[in-house]
Image (tube, rainbow, N blue to C red; front, top):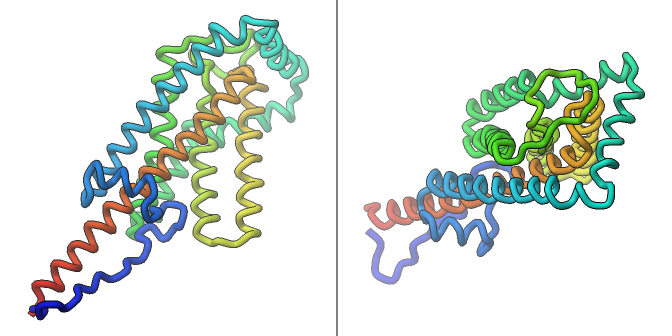
Length: 272
């Protein structure tokens, strides 16, 4: 037992994720959020932040979609300008560009994305990096769930051109492929750059992180699946999904640190 007056030493715990961008800042909003929700319950904190972020993101995207389709595009010929981009791309197709657009769409589509997620989950789980695994899994789940819920409320027809894919016609807003490319690939690049902490890696990650969504967004317009404004909305949705998962991971990390620090203090107090 500790004698009266002896200080209880609480060790400084190392970041549990190993990635600085997911670690909470002392006194920051993520730490304050975790204190209000469940001070020593990282799972409950993570789910609360995730579900709250989902509700906010869906609300924002639905409002944006309705404002765009009902108020903005009908004014001043903006809708016609939006359509003209898709028409121009369809009128200037070539076999090579069609192949490139297929590659870009597949890169952010329902075949490659699950494979990348599964590979990351396997690596992170084997390394016991549970917060990294949750980040990769739920950032895409949040993006996908937001897209599907938004299309339930916002019905926008895809461009009136020869479309190169068969998908629901009235699910044009927003571009889910573009959002997924930012959420998954941008998220992985963010984790890598934050882990390595080298200026060259940061620069390369930024370039690639911008290039992939541009490539995917161009492909979705080129294939007649989305308007330019749909792609822009997809960019916003992907970035917002990343922000929600970073916040949720930080909040969960703060709760985990508080829980583990409490356990260490209790074990030292009761030690003989």
